Length: 371
Image 1 (tube, rainbow, N blue to C red):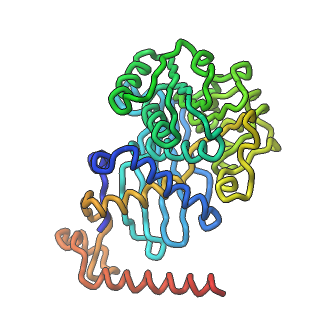
Image 2 (cartoon, helix red, strand yellow):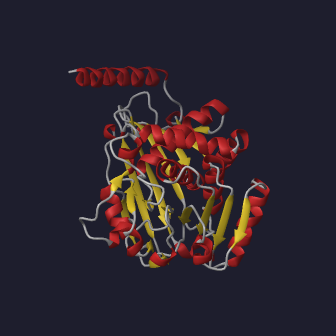
Image 3 (cartoon, helix red, strand yellow):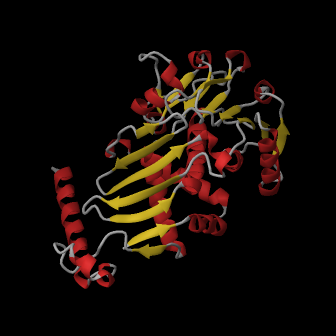
């Protein structure tokens, strides 16, 4: 059987654990997986583009588990009462291919993106950062603001969105969730950036926009560029990148989708895992400008799906579903159509056989590693 987690289950996890704790735990899990970067079979996501949006598949695997995420990005979805981004994901067992978990990832992606942003800023931003400009006050803005407040000690949010109603919604939510967090609604991007230590850009338009220009830069700023996440979609003027040290998740994917898609192929960037592992330096001085060109990478979803499965198990959440037929005779697939009542019941011999198979494969892998 496969565990199913719905949006209701994710909300219950947050209710039981608290959002600050969930964000910390996700950051810890994502960091741990980035530190074993070489163990993963990685690839850029597979994208299907249309005039109005994009639908993507994001796969990754280590020797034990495989995951993928289905995710879309449709900026005009609000007109139809739908989120701009919607997602679900699957976690499977490498040794047998058996799907272990089917989970919503719309809420979870917002949380893992915020946790990843904090992970990067912890390595790249000035340690004394206290003020964050938040450009784009849509669906991810509360998650970003609260993650930086609880995770990095940000004490003031300077917010701007072309939609004033979105900024007002953000203000109300933050006043309720973190009343100690100062909030300043700004009339422009330039006003929001004035005096900011960290700048998070998380706009939704699928176009090569120029949200931040070089004249807005101040020494020591760290940019958390989240919104530019597909071909033809950027937020930073190339002059900002030319004046900054730029860090990415997975360079082959970022070259296609990130802010650096507008730069020449030899433009220097550093993958974040190298900074986290000590193989490369991060911020070199208090005045240096740093950019985390964040497009979202499948490894972050792998970490999230594993954390969700573990946490749901601890809290007794989710339900078991027959996502695949579980048969007494694995060769008799046709029999599942003739006797549908038996196709949903796992045979007594099935689990022990799968467990023995998994143990055998893991033993083989261990022997090869030792060799």
